[in-house]
Length: 323
Image (cartoon, rainbow, N blue to C red; front, side, top):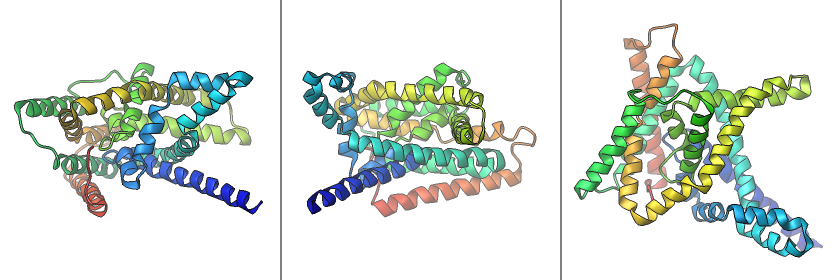
């Protein structure tokens, strides 16, 4: 009897540990410039994460759903073990918890203090590109060309020279697919992709509105208030699920076949995205002049603080590795 109680405690501790991992990973991915994949590497569960995500296939899901049949229960049990849901579920809950909390902060700060917040994000992104780029070598014209394509593409979008089509369902779906795929790649932040797509603050607002409306239901809130933000959240999550089964696997295949070129492209994409947060400032200061000497100094100061925070994190963990 005593042995069973100890075993139960161990299982609960594993669940709690996975939830804690999710909190750390979700916090990192909710901040541009910091990668959830890097956090997974630093905490030592990246291999388990990749194995579990790779095991999430439609075929295994169908096998699990067929477990209601007595002759398929053993196969369903094996499929569940292969997908490592006892690790993925608490990890996912932890990530969602962190993202929801940070989304509320972002929504509030975007309106009250846009210069410090977006300046801090720009500093995080710039420093992240420097920290990751130090380990890369540009040994041929192909390396330089790939860097130019990645950085140039991101700069065109960040500077709003190439405009993306608003915040429609298709854009949200694609942004979700790419952002959630980026979450499992060391060096690339899901939030960075959303900023580049111009969806970061919008999706933070929608998520906060959805959580607020959901929490208001027991107090007499209206179900109608859930519809619009809930639809946005569902579209984003659906895109994320598709991304995990498609884009994430494509990027991993590219890493396996052309590691150096893929890493150069990804890091160049980060570097070119540095101005992207600053573009969001004009969207949240419509009633006041966007740039003055005072606001420029404030933004530059917070950019420096963001860069220093990233470099301090790099120093504490002994350096970032984009692999």
